[in-house]
Length: 438
Ligand SMILES: [Zn+2]
Image 1 (tube, rainbow, N blue to C red):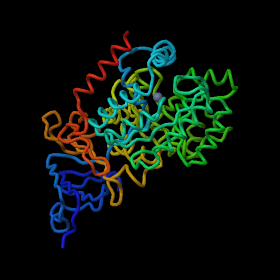
Image 2 (image 1 turned 90 degrees about the horizontal axis):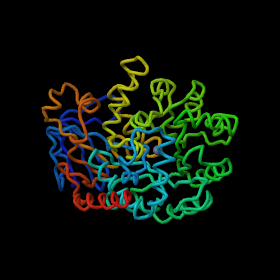
Image 3 (image 1 turned 135 degrees about the horizontal axis):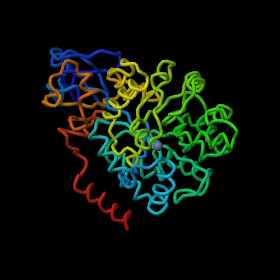
Image 4 (image 1 turned 45 degrees about the vertical axis):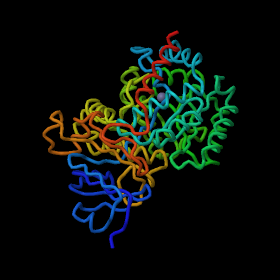
């Protein structure tokens, strides 16, 4: 007797990511109770299973859901507010004043909703966030059914959210407790950056991350100025300071890591740290180009991030795949740097590994959660298709994403979000735009 299951997805191509560098043709994925129960040839599907739903994707490539390893989802409400500026001026004169005036639980909720809708439409099924009022981030993510690792932010200056580092951490822990039974939510500690967090606060963050067994997510070596300021203030570069504080370790996700010397790449590799590479944000803020080819050679785990929409201005991991690949080739002089399969691995399994979620998501393997993204390939813009991985990395755009599932639940169907009213969402964005401009 065939086994009853919830869903059978038949796809022209499946790229499982693990095993690496393979493409399965005319295969199906069987899903039950949100998990992958089998990956099999299409001809076998109906013998082995009686699915409640069959989704036929005969012009599509099915990949694991994309992981956005560094973002500030709520900042979508500040998209395009201040462009063409370097990071310090952009932050000091534009972003921080706007945040001081407007950031509230409602702002974070609405901005995150906008961001989650954008990410889902672009095939992202999991994002690693860092922002104020993380409770509002968690609520918005749950509303749209996207998986999130919510950063419990800590800085040493007061904001509308918290008074000092202790207050940030106490509030963060309370949020973690509140949502601890939500299977789609995980948490990480997010000390913003070495230039906004004191040694004393880092020590507390480190103790908490060890106690709670959660990753650490911070900006790291994003600009030259950050390093020069650290040399003046602490007499050492930020990574050396973190090494002395004991912060370097397998749980550390350093966002950006643009300016690294050879020995610093070695240090990150030795300690098993991960890097959230954000090529578009680094280019837009003129921060520089991260040495991805060299980091990869040394074995640093590299995932991809968009950063916030205020500095990108898209939350589009497919585009980051293409940009990361082209930049690595151009800056290293090696045309084989970050090939198509590797770009996809960075956007999926490497991101999952950085978050400690690689047993749950990041590849299409039996037993893992059914988090998928389907891309429709029968568009003349993409024709012909000699190789679906090449199509994904170099030709396809997020407009080609047709269907997205998170834990077996359809979050995008034929390009539409069934759980989200797009007109209301646009109105919400317009409302905030009026407030920010007033
Ligand atoms: Zn950032």
